[in-house]
Length: 321
Image 1 (cartoon, rainbow, N blue to C red):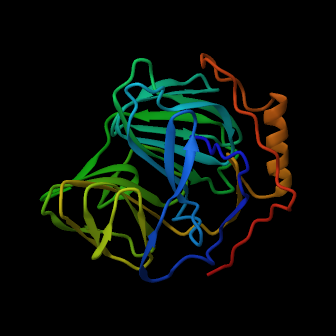
Image 2: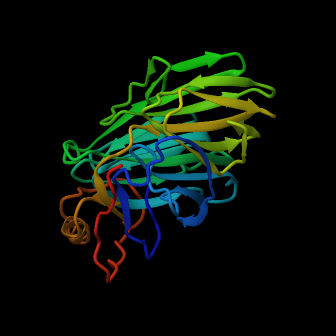
């Protein structure tokens, strides 16, 4: 997934200065961003005052959108470094292509996981023909320094493990939850899970007190630790929790995102996660020159051009907790 802002702001991320070391209930409101020709997304991370949750550095929620007479998602080839992208659908389909030669249609509750590593480029589009509705989330996971120059690769997992309780099914997207582990490759301690709750469900989900957590509402009415969380919003929960109370007032679905607080300081600009301004400048120049990031074959259309860098210096920031 691309950040298609024409004038993206540099984001100083990471470090533990903004980590809340105790349980909190901080409701995050989204920022609306246009993505491609006909898709509008609600951006939850990075957010004013909340840059990351564990290694999760970017979260977009979109839909449900009626795209029966629209092209749907159309994101031309674009570059990434230093991160993983996670494609997660509740409705619709997304066709993924990348410069390693991967070609895969991703469907609801299937994991498309792309590790950019040192450099990759990819495109995402609604197939033709496509389903009427499109609803899902796109997320980025920052790679730690020791793994951020790894070779790029793509993983597809159609069958993911689940954790069940009365009225609740949790699909483990990444990492581990309640002793159940996703097959997706991770590089830091984290968890991503899709929770489906039946109307009237009251459940308590076990958590790791060393992780910080957030809950993104996808659909329905859910109270998370007593706080109503509406679709397209996210509740940040801080650290120090051993369990999470959930109450569904209707059939509902939320995404649980968590992880060990990310200690390294980062710069996130456009579709790049780096450590220095020079690294970001070099990546932009190499994308514009057509080197390093390979070629996405089969996409009908031009690739994205990188926006201009801002005139202010890009500096990683953050404080040690």
